[in-house]
Image 1 (cartoon, helix red, strand yellow):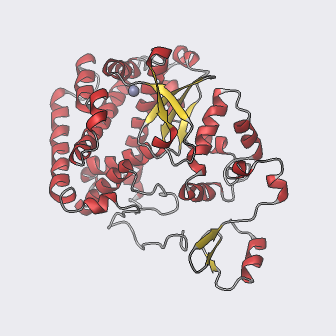
Image 2 (cartoon, rainbow, N blue to C red):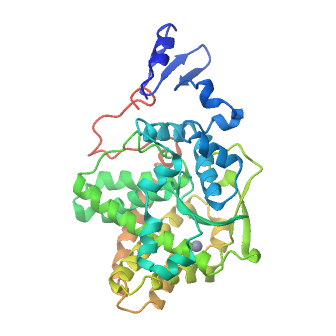
Image 3 (tube, rainbow, N blue to C red):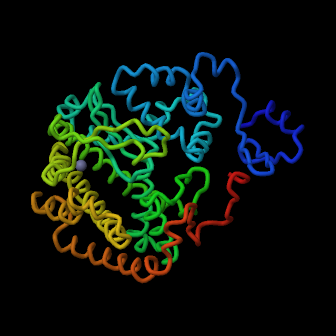
Length: 403
Ligand SMILES: [Zn+2]
């Protein structure tokens, strides 16, 4: 992110302030955050809107987005679109790309996330060949969700990075206590997870860490998160292989409902939720794991935790009266949990008694919410910004100046 040309220009502007990335110029009524200067060579042949992709896409990728001709191009477009209209997301990607030789957005996602591939490895060759033409991966979408999308080139599977962050903090809430994490940090993690879901927590964890857990605990929590995402990819692959995206069951979702974008004219076509399809996709995701009851159990337990987390969220949403129309079409997460438990062989996954003990813990978490967060601290949940883990955050950084 060092740029001597930029330094020279800004040394001549009175009052220009050096920021962590670029400069800030304050005028009477506005402040400008300037990151860099685009050269003519970089922008040549690109439309103005296309230059917004330049901080995180190669020119070749921008041309692929312009002339989409495959489902991988569609995935690339979705990934780029999820970043372009959010200044904070652009800053996250400027940091991710800084100093990386041969950076491209596609390469970044390929090198850093492999939940989809890990699922396919466990499912084996036959399943892999059924899904070989389905591009799958993460995107920086703010909606806590994953999707199997119908495009004119074929299906595409995307899990949103917001979901990864959400699961990470919910795992701290749920499992942190047995790792000795303090109550104050668990409470803060719960607030972060809920705020991610409400869209009020800024997704800039890369540039503004909320507090680093000790490496050993971080590794454990990340490991749970990874397994949960592997299950989620299995679930989305199941929607594809079970034919849930046949034309009769496709619904349009406006792009603006899931990401920051100015494009009000674009819809995403994904399957419409039906209880039976969700149940089948859950079960199939586990059944398709080949000859490995141990890993099937791990996947089942990962699913159980995800459902418990979404049940806690539902609780908050109901309290905030936000979930009225969603709950009618979407199966209740605990129904999904018990349905899955009932369909699996008893030796696969946690027993009914163990699940009941998990639900006791989730009951305590709901109590914490009802007593501590929801009645008195709603503002803190809804205000846009960041929350930190008190025991692990050393210094609160100043936005734009320090990061
Ligand atoms: Zn589903």
